[in-house]
Length: 222
Image (tube, rainbow, N blue to C red; front, side, top):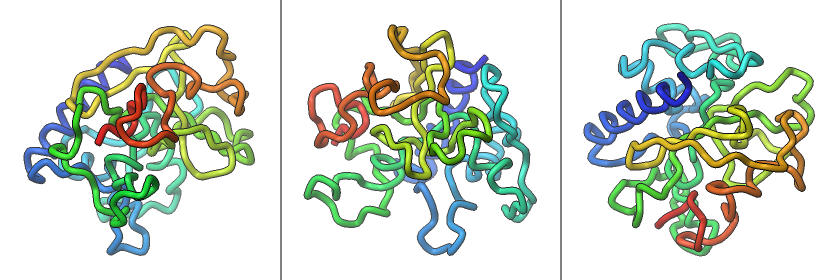
């Protein structure tokens, strides 16, 4: 069911790219103080590409609470309604150009275009996600709508979640989907992820902090 959801999201990304001349959704709208109201998942719901925000609630993860927002995009309960969907977006490389981190582009809030990716089939687009901010782990193993390319327990980002018997599902930038190999040795409980025990130690999530096109860096394939 979860992999099927990602395949449908691959179709939604394909439609979006076709209508935006190949430009990926921005991770937020720089022209809006509350720019997260234009995040990728909100765009897809508004366009009718998916039926509602419950579509982003992975059947294998019961800790989330994903509900629809108001027609104008507002949400008095933003955390529960939009941010904690259980598929996270590779926002640093697709929603903005993370090349600025490595001495490249400086317009970091400009979304990537698919023509800029050397190997879209090897660029992570979405993956099962879990919110890793340690101060909020008491709220349960909820997802998060964007993924960091490296483990971070002190920032408002998500990490890949090996919630399918130590496997994680991935949607790639060319819209095909895969399931990772079992992350043998990884702790079952996602709430216990730490710097020495997390999915970034396993393919295809390794080397996200390395430069673009670094061997086995499937986050930034410029």
